[in-house]
Image 1 (cartoon, rainbow, N blue to C red):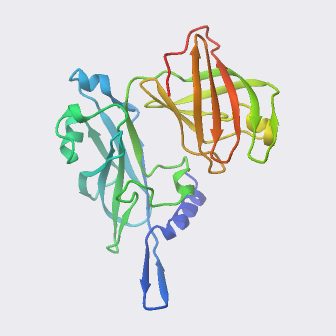
Image 2 (cartoon, helix red, strand yellow):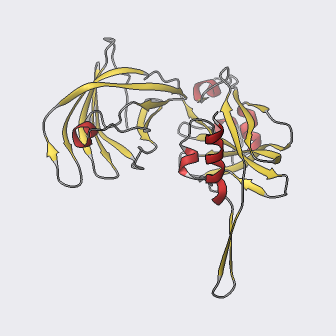
Image 3 (tube, rainbow, N blue to C red):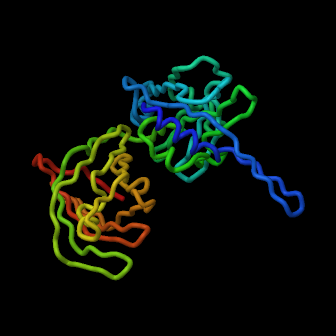
Length: 300
């Protein structure tokens, strides 16, 4: 990792912990330097929580490594957030007062149940749930830093969240095995944007879904040629999520806009759908497999 990246990230952490004091008219904001850790999934462990393994009483093995990237850290607690499909968020601790880094942690389904009040048995682990592993840091000057707030939201800047150099958390979806990675031919028409521009012309090309594990795929261009027509650009950073054949867009593009998919039709080696962004762009896309096989029974 380049030292300049570390320095930039630490500067971004300046606003991680703020305290405001109202004295009847004057406000005092105290900025505090923080620290950065790197949480990565072990490559030889599960990339997602396999619901079929749990239902068959087979052990799962989630593994992460945690290392100090920058800052004077005294100790860390390994924190978990378990998010139910109905939006309920449970918080627990897997390990506490870790002083030696790097640190390695392995978790099975019973560890998950034991960590979170609200999960009584492994049968409470359901499709659509997700586990997020992160940390809370105690610095050598006594201050504590939460990488995620108690509601599971990020307690750091979007620039830190989007970096590929290190990760402040790792997510494990409760899902099934997924195999949507590959390169596909796209055909996109009825492209438009909020300012009123619209074209019914058809634009073609290829798009790649790169497997990130656990049913998550990066999309080489989430506009499937639409941004090229509108702006001479591509839609980057958006992901496709597959949870037991239920698919959706995940994350935001380089402009901070989210994507939504509707009108999904699966027909052999082709799928078609309508996509829209939170900014107001839209288009109708058909994806064709290049390996002569059929798409799985995908749904929204």
